[in-house]
Each structure stands twice: as C-alpha cells, then as structure tokens.
Image (tube, rainbow, N blue to C red; front, side, top):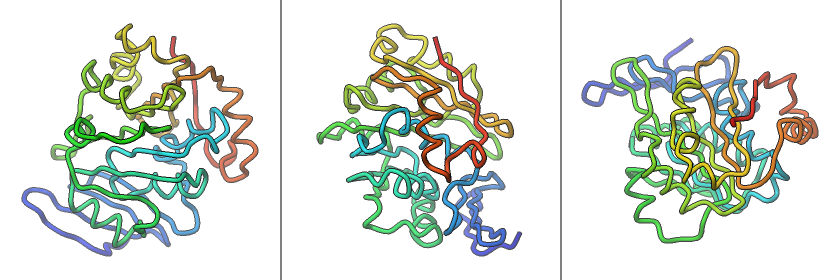
Length: 245
C-alpha cells in the first residue's frame, strides 16, 4: 500500500493511501473511508449505511442528509444505487472535505457539502424534511474511535424533527450495546415514532448500524429488494440483520 498524499494538521496526520485502484483515507492510522472508481461497494461499514434505503423501493428516497462525510464513500453509494434528487453532506473536518473532493471524486453535482458542526447546522436548518438521514458522526482521539455526538434524547429528537414521517434514520455505533442504549431504542418517547427498527452488522467489523423506519418493514423484504440489484446481493455484501424490539 503506497502513500499518495499526506498532511499534518496539529496532532493529526492525514494520509491517502492506494491499494490497487482503491484509495483509503487514514487519520493517525485510523481507517476512515475507501473509494474505488469502478466498485463503490466495498463490503465495508459504508455499505450498511446505504442499505436501509432498500427496506422499501429506493425511488421513494428523494432527499438525503449525510452527517459525517469523511471521504465521501457513502455519497458514491447513494448516487450509484439511489440517484436521489438531493444529497446534503455536513462535515466538521475541513481536511476530510478536501480529500473527498480531491481524491475521492465527490463533485458539486453529486452533493452539496458543508463544512460545519453537524449539531449546530441541523439546529439552524429551516428547510424541507429529509427522506433519509445518515448519522455517521465519529471522532478519533489517538487511535480510539467513538461517536462524536451522543445518541441521547436531545440529539435523536433533533434528527426526528428533520426526518419525514415515513423516512429512514441510519446511525452508526460501535457495538450493539451502544445501539441499544441510544435514545432511539431506550427512550419510549423517541422509540414510539418508529414502526420498525433493525441492527445491521458485518462479521469483520465491530460497528452496529441502527436503521429506524417510519413504516412497516422486514429483513426478508430488505433482502428481496437487494436481490434485484446484482451488485448488492449477498454474494457481495455478507451482512447480518436482526430486528430490534
């Protein structure tokens, strides 16, 4: 694996490394994003952030908000498989946005990118609700990753206010325990807004992806819809899913 680009900002060292035609973003050695121009799905966590759109027909997903852009991997997936009318990405880290544009080929016609604090940006937002919100807000201290914004009642309420009634909320957690302790699961006043909730995971990753839906759904329905897209079949993405009760 070769280093294509590197930059030191304060105590953080950013690197874009190549592995074949893939490009990978690292900060202080932590793997953040991966992009391959001919293969947007990688069998990684980013795939799971996009898959919940297929609990129903993905044509229903018109407006998508991505909180925590990183290198923009999930934006490529959304464009490739959903082709929504609008994607808005909010990212606090200016270097991540530089990498997304310069090395991960995120163009202006693909997404509107904003360098901002996601909490403040969403609190200030006064536009139409979103059909899908992806919360991938992570920070790293040295080599330890964790959520940058706690999934508490205040934050989950903010997300809900900006989500269409039948929309899809997707949140990334480190482990199923953190997911179960989130307000979207543990707080009845929040959880009652969702008709269906699921946990998605991959064998090689610790991450647990929460998918919270405002409409009835099933894991069988998700797999059936994905089977119609050869690139997203179980042959390419060997994910696990279970319903959260």
